[in-house]
Image (cartoon, rainbow, N blue to C red; front, side):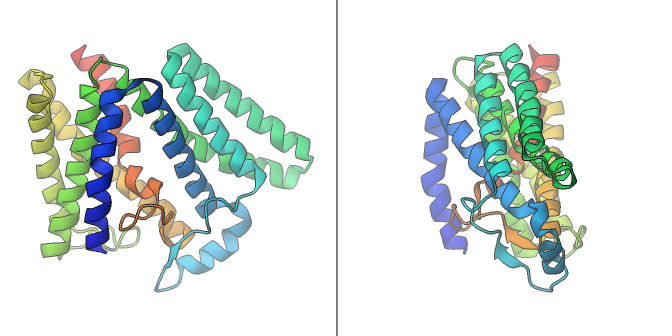
Length: 285
């Protein structure tokens, strides 16, 4: 498991770095594809038609490894993934286009369930799909907004790799010396020792990346961000753990060996990227 995790990271990190540095349409298309797949993983795990099975699974001592394959979905799920891609594309064009894409997605998904003509399942399915669009699409599209804040993608580099640093420190220290479990009902593997390491590692990663990228934000600007990012990253991780625990699954997918699915790898980023984006807009620029 650990070897697979390290091998996936060794291949994935250079690709992520290259996409951020390249920016432009290639970055946006990659973000849209990854977020679209993550949305499908979310829909597979939370499909209300499987609610009874999921609740029974959640009560078992051993969770099933992953949700059903992301490509075996009902029509509303594919429509929701398309809506996520549309919101990401809108973010690349500008703030007005981004909000217009979100509004269009909300209305179009309502139209879809209206055309099906089943009021008993229509509202249920609309809420289900909109949850995925908001969680994965709206939050995730900040990856594109953040990349557009500067020509070199330095703020995106800081947000993404400081988040990875937080997760990595928390994971390895928690595995090695973690003893005090703090949120066992939601994520039994998370420990106080791991969280402490994540806070320290994330704080250091923000300061280091501020220097390495040449952002050179002042101490009064970067230290508050370094204090905020690690706990927000942990909240993002716990949010997805809540989804998975409720669905009775260990991972949302199997596309990334050792990590699970794309949503498993992006969970913290869905929270930290908006944080960094608005922090830069309101406290730095």
